[in-house]
Image (cartoon, rainbow, N blue to C red; front, side, top):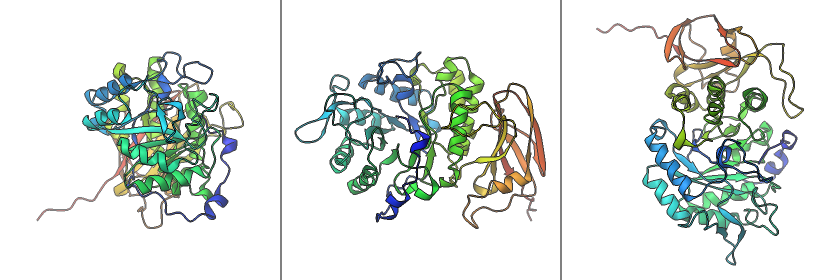
Length: 432
C-alpha cells in the first residue's frame, strides 16, 4: 500500500489531455475518522502491521469502533468516518461483475454495517484499488476485486451501501482508473470523499482534480525519527498543493500505537505535524482500548482547529538548521535537526511549529520574516499581512504564553515540538 517516492512522477500530460470537471462533493476540510490498517492490518507476508496489534478486522470490530468513537468523545470533536480497508471482499467478483463480500467476516453485509455506523451519527467508508485486484488479494490466483474498468458499477454499489468515503488504493494501479472513479462517484449523486494512492503529488499534475486527498508518502510506522518525521518532510515538498477540498495525505495516524510503545512525546509531535500539514486525521489504533494519554492528544480541540481551518493552507518549513539527521534513504529528503514550520490561518491568525528531532535540547527561534514566508502558497489577496502583534497560544499547554512582535525563541526538548497558534491583537474600540 506504499507510494514509493520514485513513483511520484508527473502525470500532468495525462491530466492535460483529459477534459475533467473535478470532484463535485462539497468536502472542503481534511477528513477525520478511523481506519483499521495500522493496528489490525496483516501484510502479504502474513505478519501484523503493528506487532502489538490484532490480526484482521471484521463486522464486530468495526461496530465496536463506531460505538467507541461516540463514547470516547472523539466524535464530538470531529472524528466522523469509520472506514474499512482491504479485506472486506473475497478477492473476486461474481457473475454480475460486483465485488463479492467476505461473508465470513461481514455476515450481515455491507449496507447493514453502514446503517449501523450511520445510526451512531457517523459516516461510513469503504476500500478498493485502481488495479485489477486489491492490495491484500493481488497474490490470490486470478484475483479480480480491484476497480480497474469497473469504476461505474463499483461506485453505484458503494452509493447503494450508503458509503460516504472511498479509499482508492494503488498496487499495480493504472492511471486511467483515477479519473474514471472520480467521474463514477460524481455520477451517483451521492457525496463521497475520495482518497487515493498512486497519483503524482507533483504540483504540476494538479492532483486536486482527481481526489480530495492523495498519499504523498510510503506507508508509515510508529517510530518518530525513522518513519514519521521523514514522511512529514517528504509531504512538505508538496505543500503548495493544499487548499480547501484538496490535501496532501502523509498517511494514517499512529497516535495510540506509539503510546502503547511508551512514546507519548513522539505521539504528540507526530499529531502536531499532521495537524499543521492539513493531512487527513485518520486514527489507526484500537479506539476501544485507547489509553488516556492518546485520547488527550487526539481530542485536543486547539490542534484539531489548526487542521480544520477553513483556509486549508498547509504549514510548511520556513526555517531549517544546517545540521541534518542521518539519511534514511534516497526516497526521503534530508531532515534538519531543528526546523520551524508556519502557515496562515483564517482571520489573520497563523500557526507555528518549532520542531527538534536532535538528541539534546535546542533553542529555536520564530521570526516575523518566517510568518511572511509562510504566506507563499496563499492566493493573492486572500491572506492579510501579519499583524503588528500576536497573542501566542501554546496548543499543548492550552495556555497563552505571551505576545509576539518580531521574534520569539524557546527551548525545545529532544523529539519534541512547540505548537503555537498566533492570534492578532486587535486595537480596542471604545463603546459609546
